[in-house]
Image (cartoon, rainbow, N blue to C red; front, side, top):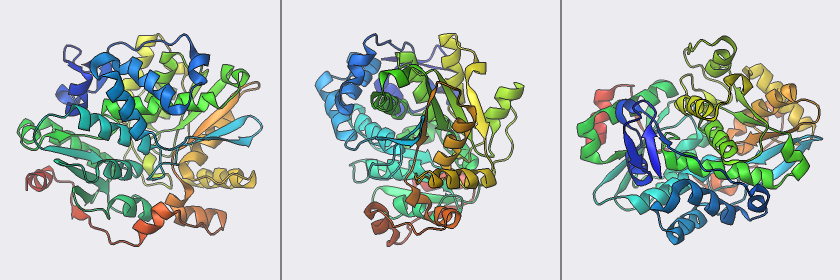
Amino acid sequence: MNLYNIKHPTEQVSFAQAVRQGLGKDQGLFFPETIPQFHNIDELLALPLVERSQKILGALIGDEIPTDKLNAMIENAFTFPAPVAKVADNIYALELFHGPTLAFKDFGGRFMAQALATVRKDGKITILTATSGDTGAAVAHAFYGLENIEVVILYPKGKISPLQEKLFCTLGGNIRTVAINADFDACQALVKQAFDDETLRQTIGLNSANSINISRLLAQVCYYFEAAAQLTAEQRQNLVVSVPSGNFGNLTAGLIAKTLGLPIKRFIASTNANDTVPRYLQTGEWSPNATVATLSNAMDVSRPNNWPRVEELFKRNGWNLSELGSGALNDAQTETALKAQYAQGYLCEPHGAIAYQVLSEQLQAGETGLFLCTAHPAKFKESVERILDIELPLPEALDKHNKLPLLSDEMDADFVALRAYLLK
């Protein structure tokens, strides 16, 4: 598999290099030079999740990793289902919260851990990543206990849910967590600064597990196929997918699935009040505002890192950005959407509620709608209980961590301080 740096296309790397390196020159994102097309989609969709994913990732990655090794990586990573649930007559939910940390990031995080363990070289590796909520837990649990790999996770203090925080800030061992006194964009900026420091990168073997890492992104492609496999052939012909969007890795994966040949009619990028992309699609002006805290905190991102990949795909495929739907909800609208879902008999959480509502408003006659549920409602226990006036029991995976003390350090958004912390 050959990949190029979107900012500097002459910088080209293998899949293994991209996994180890994370980012290219000038913080450029790596992207596949070619994306194959499947012409036997129905046959592919008839396969079980793991077997189908082995064919998808095998086609994308090529022969760089031996087939038996890659197949084992996927089998070890995808050990949980991604069921589709009916919510309304023509609207379905893809539930991506059945993994060990109850969020969609389990797919990418676990596959990345398998990939890095396979392609790593000798010496120390430090995974440095920023999280707006669910990435932290997925990465921490995927890499917990792995030899010679240290993980440092930055997150905005007070801006993720208490249960999200407990799930990855109670592990210890090779997992270090740092609460940054700022927003997610500041955390992400610190990660980028670290990658620009060549001495630091070499000294601690720096890598990232955000969706900027291509291995995480490719893994996410697989669950779009899994969703389509659970719908009828007729439903697939007019399928509209609404993606709750923060850093836009999830939407990028869906667009790669469409490029591979998955019949998705169109996508909708659904955001909260951090609506840089919906405004950009309406006005043509890229003007990020200051990030604001919302109920859907995993989408509290004003400068989405993966947007260049989205634009690259549209350009390469000859698609027009006007074909990409979008919408944004504020917190009051999110609460209304969550109540509407619950009244229909479906319990969701803020991110999925936004994707559902925007989809409901934009779905046309004859279309089938699918929205992504990216986290278990219990991860947002306080807000979901308040909004719906219910009591929500904690799943065992959350309950056991909720009883443990937080082990996080605290720091201002200061790169000098972070650099010293990483080197100690």
